[in-house]
Length: 166
Image 1: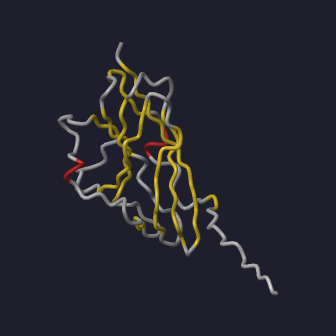
Image 2: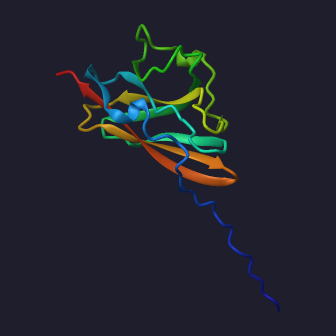
């Protein structure tokens, strides 16, 4: 009797990436609000991807890496800057200047292509609910992307500080 072994399926291992610019506007400080309330929903825009490399990339996923207790991410979305009339870095659901994201096209279901040397016209957004007074900030924005058939992960600086009004 012959027994055969088939090689184990290799998982695609993502490598640390460097294609995205690390010095964007959102990398230089903390955005936040000191007058939030438990139960409110806030939208936090992740840094707009800027591809500094000489080859196009396809972003497959974006997320905030560190979510403190007291904040729950309800969903992530990807929206066109032209449809939101600019970048809503931090916006409260139902606010006068908050885009109606539910009525806009969400591009998160498919990879977002960013040409070489260009800024994306699509940005990623975290929809977050305050479930209890957060004790610390939400921070570090992770992007997963493919370039030339290889998978990469790159973390950019970003920080969100939501304080519940006493």
